[in-house]
Length: 267
Picture 1: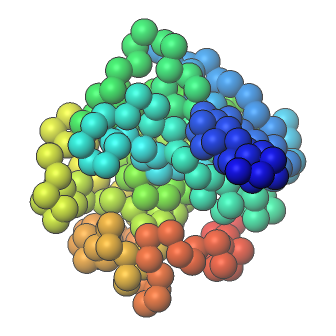
Picture 2 (picture 1 turned 180 degrees about the vertical axis):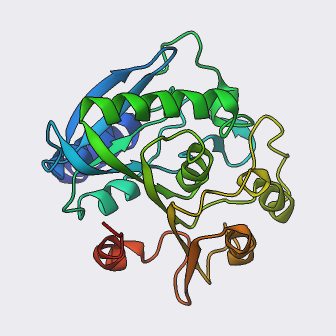
């Protein structure tokens, strides 16, 4: 093996061994986002904010990422569920309004808390404990940045959380979900997964208030979240719109249309 090839192999090995929270943080820094850590009553949360966030904000967009990697090959529980990619940051870095990313309990290198246990990213990933922790964090951020209106934006499992959190956010103005799991019972049956008994199911929660603007995005070629599951949820809501994109999958190609989606958010 030549020296050049050896150096290249070593670089690949080091990159593959880099902790996912470090990769995520590096990407956030490359996008010009500022990192902080929020201390909640029981858990810490990693937060990234863009340059538009001021001490006082008329409207604040809060981004919620997907489930990350709770399982390895759908067989073994992962010791670190932090996302292996920064897809949610690719959306957020296009946002020209005040925006921040809010991490889940025990994600992004914050697993030293003795309250962290793997049920929080597997069976109970959408459970009461996670929802309460996220709701407390949003309340703190709303107060910290004097936000008058909150818009929750969630991708995949982050969209699940956005809907469940809508019951707890007092200044909620609107929410957007992207390829979100809005019927966890139908989803686990569809894939043959174990039921999420310790989680809440958005499909079984009370309808969101009609004063809250809702937009739900689905890909017709999404093999992870069937669009009919999202459609069934939207059909129950008094003020919700579903946009289906025929050629889109679970991840492609939301980044391309994101600026237009952001422009649709009402003042």
